Image 1 (cartoon, rainbow over the protein chains, first blue to last red):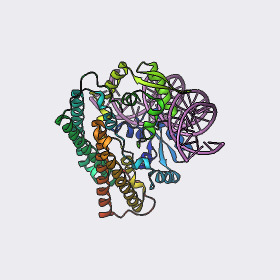
Image 2: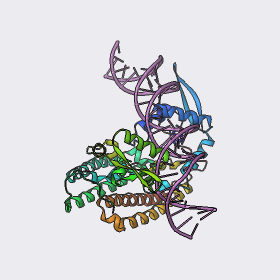
Image 3: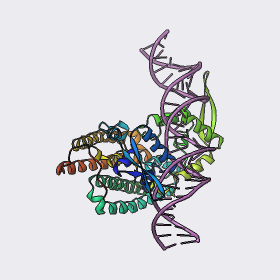
Amino acid sequence: VLGIIWRRGPCTAYVARHEFLDSPSPYWSGSAGAVYPVLGRLERGGWVRAQAHATGRRESRRYVVTPRGRAMLGRWLGPPLPDWILGVPPDPLRTRMSFLGALSTSQQARLLAEAERAGREQLALVRAELKRPEIAADRCDRIVASGAVAALEARVAWLAESRARLGGRATARKPGGGRPPRSG
Amino acid sequence: VLGIIWRRGPCTAYVARHEFLDSPSPYWSGSAGAVYPVLGRLERGGWVRAQAHATGRRESRRYVVTPRGRAMLGRWLGPPLPDWILGVPPDPLRTRMSFLGALSTSQQARLLAEAERAGREQLALVRAELKRPEIAADRCDRIVASGAVAALEARVAWLAESRARLGGRATARKPGGGRPPRSG
DNA sequence: CCGCTCATGTAACTGGTTACATGATTTA
DNA sequence: TAAATCATGTAACCAGTTACATGAGCGG
């Protein structure tokens, strides 16, 4: 939230909120019950300042980042970065793959096929995003967008390879509900 | 947690907990205050069953997944998978890159260099993991490990390219704390 | 006997989500 | 004038984290 207020210049909580709501990433929902309280905490802590800004009869508060808030943003950004950020990036799809053995072989194939197809679709979307002039013009936006493209390309290639390996030599797994393999 | 109980066969909450504690992924900390309550909920819901298992004077409860729990696991795994899982995978590093403009040019370069170096280190670790026989032998483990390798390779390549672009033509940004660009 | 691991929990704190509540302004 | 958007919040609920508390078994 602090970063968004910094980037969007003086802006309302509503605008910051929609940065999350419009984002394809589901990490944070951007619910009002989260954004308004966090802005209150940031203001009380002196990291942002609110300017009253009335348009007609409607009142709104526009937030700006204070020097103290900027310093905090710098510390948050790093360097140094905490280890957990530099480690293997989380992927909910990869997590589920750990439990692939709980599905029948045909279900496994169907799951991988669905994920790969959806991945290609998403890839087309983010590639189009990367080509948009307002994204391509900004250094940071371009880096972020190309990172999303790279992550999706890697995922699609990984899924394709996994699917090929699965289909290639389908080890006969006895029917019976896919019991977990006994750890010897 | 349900998936771990399924995969590890009859196992204690302690074992399930350490699956999170030992994992490099920080998505869930595996704190006792989370794992024990969730196992209680799973048991009350009939998704897992506990077998009392006393070793000497020490008592412990070993959990197993019930048929109902297995059905639930299958539904959770999909197909179909929810959209947010199939979208661009989250990456805390990518998120921070959105705010790279808040750093001075030299700090930006330092940050990217640090991330790239750490990425290569991590890559060596997960590649070694992938080669371990017990990982290579299991279909799911191999898929997960190769997914981690693919994600990290993509990230390192992305960072290297971003760094080259940054260093290549360093646009003169006036000193003064890196004010956000006015959105015109 | 000291320290580590195995093993199980609880309680306070924190904070995100869901759902609700309100009202002005713009647009079809 | 109806619907959508702009705009701000609150309260109950849920659940993860932190920190604490306890005790058995085992290796040095």
